[in-house]
Image (cartoon, rainbow, N blue to C red):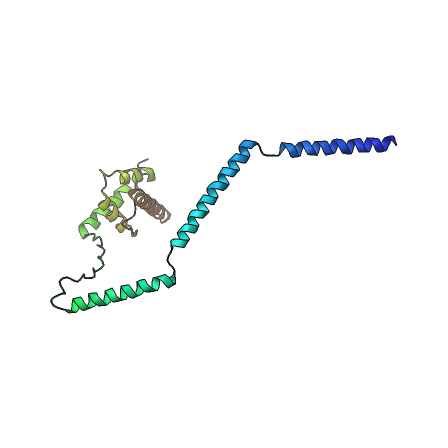
Length: 187
């Protein structure tokens, strides 16, 4: 009997310990309020999304708009064909042509000379000179890239282009060393 009372006592203590742990894991009032606020924000957002979806036109409502567009296009075509009205009708604009940069032979010769002069320098020195806009303009940097057969775009930054050029020159130095050619060094 003493054993069963002791087991029951241990079970009761274990139950009370688990109950204390459960109570300890309950949220505080501040945590509950924070969750309520987040749920309210989410509900407001979902209501806004719902309103936006309701205001979005459907295919059925757009059919009338398509008919209006077609009739306006027909009127514009008719106005363009009429010599009296042709000056008043809007004309379609042609797409702007992209200007391609033309590197002259003189620019290319200077760029090749720059590549040769950069070869004895360490890569970090090459990069710093290319990044210095007083020492190397963006046009000159693009010409050097063209001399190294590096494709450029108008959106390329000076930093990315300088990095590519410096890396290409370093690779060129490495190829020359592997081929047995001597590369002058400043170190």
